Length: 114
Length: 114
Image (tube, rainbow over all chains, first blue to last red; front, top):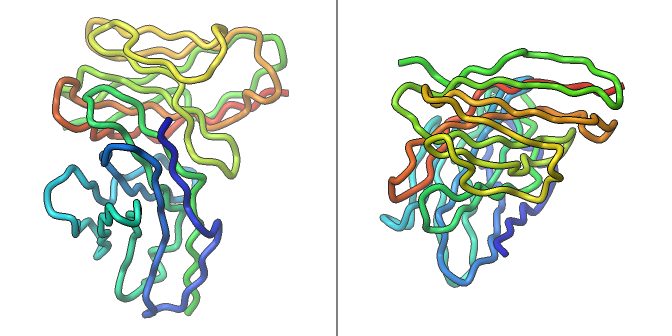
């Protein structure tokens, strides 16, 4: 069964610093991979997705992620954190078949200090 | 284009009662998935409906049931509520049959079971 591991339940950075949120997946076949963001009392918003095109994926709000098959990783980065980036971030995986479920990690809370 | 909507926003029930949550999918989408997000956890897949038929189910007991209507809106029903059913219930819609499973989430229904 597929699974997702997000290393670090809480990450704190200063405004302007690099953001790095880690995600590793377990799957025998490269799956589809997603990063979602959740602001307090809201649903999930898709930041970016990997669907086997370019391994470096650019998303909204300046975020990007790189798919590394050899490391089974899909880490999320942003060069310069902004206060508005403070939120909960979820990595998710689904297999390469339309209509299958998203399997989510436990999430990483990003705090940004001024 | 209208996004995914859910009702009600909040709900309080007592143990043993039954509850119905509703979801309207995004225009043009024919697939609805339901997720349960317990406090401090990632969303967990409950089930998915594609063109009014159940198209996959997660590890949830039969007292969690659903429906999808001809207009592709959906209901989640939970019978014999337990305290552990307290969670945020998220609905996501997508266009089934595509080569990847991009899901668009609603704001969720917060269910509290006392």
